[in-house]
Length: 293
Image (tube, rainbow, N blue to C red; front, side, top):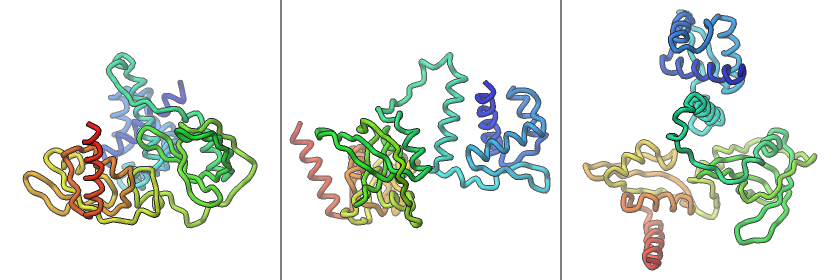
């Protein structure tokens, strides 16, 4: 119970300070009691929460000359950071725990098999240990692989592991893993490797260096433009033109099947304007789909 309450109180402090930007301890104490977060927020307890917040989320809470507390490094909670995901997950967990009476009115997405391998994979990543994996692709025989685990990525309700096989980089889905064992063999991560840069040229999890970087322009009609405004397809996305009926977006990406599939999800709401070869490729896919019907 203590641990659960501590997390709940840390999350409250993060949300309250982020919402108000800067607050004195006295102001925090007043809000703390108003929200019935527990006993009085004494300075000693507050300092313990500060340490816990830094430990869990890497957020540094400092005090200015007016004795107001604020986060000195709010950028730590970027959209794709582990800390941001952890904060979101814990916030949801606490909210659900406090909402048992309405649990039948909250619908969540299920995640396929594979989560049971997360602890050993994360440990291997932390210790730079090779993994022995038994893996079965759809429609294929079981294979055994010795790999170097580089990056875990959650995408489309599935966990994926980016590895180096000794010859090339590869992506494995955790729900296709039959067993995962951490070995005593260590490996050295390249000093210049960046997961953000590796996936930065792609949409999704499928990577293919044979697919060239492409300047893509898509036209979003009606309300679809609002969706792309609020949830961009890619970090490079920019608005290049707009009218009352449509908005044109430009982005630089390698158009792998993940990206093409996402465009098709918008149905008639999105049209690819450039490049011509991508437009023709999507036309071909649409014709093949039409033939099936």
